[in-house]
Image (cartoon, rainbow, N blue to C red; front, side):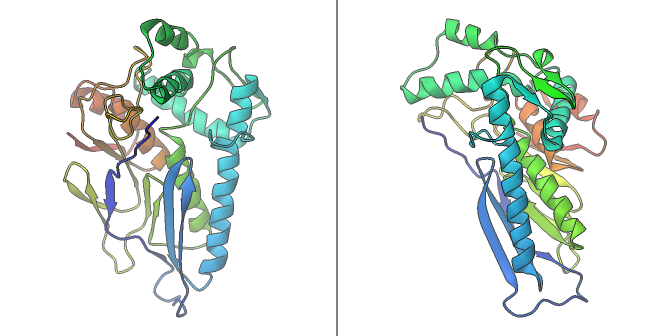
Amino acid sequence: MAITRRRLITISAALAVLPAAARAEPGSTRLWTGQALGARASIRLNHPDAEAISARVMAEIERLEDILSLYRPHSALSQLNGKGHLAAPPFELLECLSLAGAVHRASGGRFDPTVQPLWALWAQAAAGGSRPDAKAVEQAQARTGWGKVGLDAAAITLQPGMALTLNGIGQGYVADRVAALLEAEGLTDILIDTGELRALGGQPEGSDWPVRLETGERLALRQRALATSAPLGTTFDQSGRDGHILDPATGMPAPAIWRAISVSAPTAAIADALTTAACLMPDTGSIHAMIEGFTGAKLEAAA
């Protein structure tokens, strides 16, 4: 299986600092790079306590990975998928799934965390150099459906054979939680990149964060989040034909109607999920109709 990820957003700058009155000592800049839910993540701090703050950020990302990641067999999400039941689920998993449910409703079911059986089917077939046949797709579809998920503070339950994925919302959620942590530390003028962008304030000298999109547009980001998705941004096959965004209604990869779609919103989780769902929309009118239900969300580019 060839999983490729094209960078859809180019960051012109990435710096987080305290207000100018709190000057950093020489050598206090700290750059952290790593992984968050399977995607590249980076944070740059220029602060007298950069080392300690970076350590707390890394610990928070680790903690969230242990809850939300499909790539860790001991995570809360992996335990839920393996057993079909998770008692007393962590707050973060409940919150992330609740946000996912809101986008599911607004998108007419296009955004659906229960597509994981379909995703696994396509990935397995691609690893063998083939595509799944219609019967296999139909069988996997029978194990999907957001309405089959039991979700409350006491427990999350899945019907037999079901599994959830937070691809399409998890990276944004992590960005939001890291932003909340840094804001609580008293930091301002922050840009966080976990595969999605989350800006707190603007650049230290006062201007907005400049961002260039894959579609060529440039925009200024301040006190909001930005996410970009593309049907062929990640593909199962080496030929680049079968994209990773699957349509729950057909069980097939999203048709390549769009090269890339960018949405900004007050939170990265919502922006992330909206762009994923938008890749399954037939036109910009449908995208605008979905986004209207989320205060402050805006379609920035669709091409």
